[in-house]
Length: 427
Image (cartoon, rainbow, N blue to C red; front, side):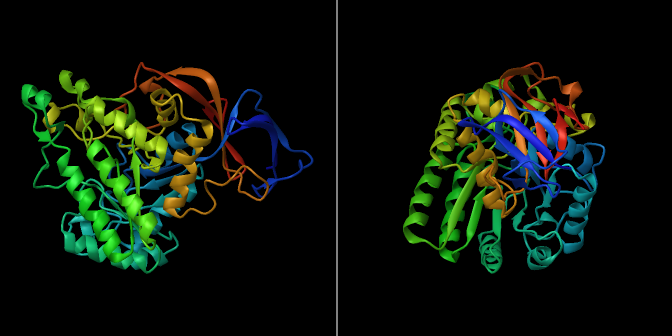
């Protein structure tokens, strides 16, 4: 289906029309009979790319499916998501990765790119089928045991050496289990002591980040740090990026979640399990450091860590509740609310261009110019949205933004030239 998008503000910088041909590509002239979208007053960005999405299928379809997660992603302006491997069974084989990829294609709303497990069954001991997953139709490039840390340095080194052969990247859930065990759920400090909640100190993240950037340098490979949450990790990343730029031949990238850019640990005072995430919400000084690092490029990308849960997994005492919160439909609004001074070109950099580059998705995060695939999101920069968790496309309702006003509104999403969201509703 051909398309003409009229009067859009490209990256908030200049007004132009966008033309899409029948093959779903941006072209330099309109195609006869094309459908028209009036984008006057709207900002056009390349479709958003999420490096960190939990779609739960297979195994926990009561919390989310690839189809429902794809719907949530499209409503949030995404045209590609990376589906994490901690499913049941774990995505640790070529067959499992291919099945996730196929289900994403069947849904047809966004590109669903499987993330492969680093170790078999997320056990942290034996490497999974890294090369076979990469050579499968799913073409897996990113590997992560997210939810668990690859805490054995020898295993992490082997994984980095292995993926180097095909340009892959290992995404680490940085949590030293000796410093922050499985019950740790609140930033370690005065509040955790007063509430009687097991503490999760920032150093448990920082020591793994420091170790892994050194392993990346040693192996000449690529490491990606998931959901960075502390000022100390930012310091390590800033040093590591300077070293990598000087040395060449290895790289370190990092992501931050929308909730770590806006929410603080003070919210845990009410024991509301909606705000239980891993890593935990941190104090304001960490939030400030994360915002600065995202703005200056020390942190490369925003990733949602969209983590849907059925009600019976969240509605427990805080210590016993599942970790995680929803994020796909609200990510852009949270980023705009947390960092209103971030330019639209920088929003595109951290939510589309950099994530696509890290993930190796060559047809995503492209410029809005002829010759690029037509992955486009159109945003009303002046509209505020009051979040209603019951209106979510997700099957879960663990939404921390319920009742909150967020800046900017996704109006239309175009995936491969096809309109998937029109006027804020799924097509």
